[in-house]
Each structure stands twice: as structure tokens, then as C-alpha cells.
Image 1 (tube, helix red, strand yellow):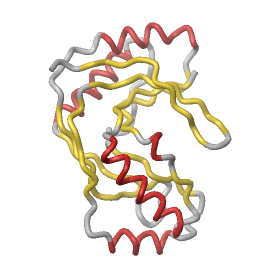
Image 2: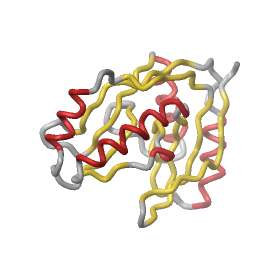
Image 3: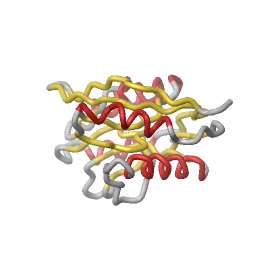
Length: 184
């Protein structure tokens, strides 16, 4: 099974991004746009693991100390690896040190089970599209520049989830397997 750990995105943010994705998809045909209902904040991509590891992964995540909820905001667009030759188009996530601390704890708990730590620095984002070609990229850049705001709301993060990702012909479908609540 293919697993990842993530925060859900507030519905207000998801609604704003749904409108933008519909608009952007009309002008930028070189990108494969995500389904808004699947947008999430990835904390750790675990990848493919044997089904027999699921229970141990769930226990490891449950061992992460309970913490206070914290705020995140969603703003500004970006491209990975860069704007000139993008592979991914995203909205940035702005949060305090609590987010990085949580990701570090998740990495440490899972590394103890033999799941490799991420080598790249954590850069929180909401993926909106993956580029197949650059068709429509200049138009997308112009459209982004014309927007009155690049703020898409925010919210208090009070729980995270373990998801299974199932690859289908129409894109990945996610199933929530477990939820881990923070203290009030």
C-alpha cells in the first residue's frame, strides 16, 4: 500500500482554490490540475509499504506527543523547481515553528521503524498542478500577476491523518486510515 501523512485543508481554502483551478485549467493546458477535493498538506510521504506494516505505522504516529493546535495560512504561488522550467505549481503555506517540529517528530517516529527520512528540506505547500509541457505557461503567469490577492485563507491545525493513496487512471484517490488529534 502507498501511504502519506497529511493535514486536511479548510473548506474555505478548498473552495477558493477550486475556482482558481477551474480558471487556470482553461488557459494552461500543459499542466495536469489536481482535483480540489484531494488537496492536502503533506507532512510525510511514506510511499509503498507492505500491508503488514500498517498497524506499526499507526502506533508510531499515535506516539507523537499531543500538542497545542497552531495556525497556518495559505498564500502566494510558486513553482518547483523554478518558474522557468516548472514541474509543480503550488500555493505556499505559512506557519510557525510548530509545523516543522511536528514534521520532525513524524520523521523520527517513522525512521525508528526503518522508513527513511526525507532528504530534502521540508517546504510546505498545496500542489495545484504538475506540468507535462509548458503549453499555456506564459498565460498562467499573466493571470497570476493580474490577481488582486494571493491569499487563500488559513486555519487552526488540530489533527493530522494517515492516508492511503490509490493510483487510478483519473489520478490518485485518497482514503483516510487514521486520525491523530492534538490537545485542546
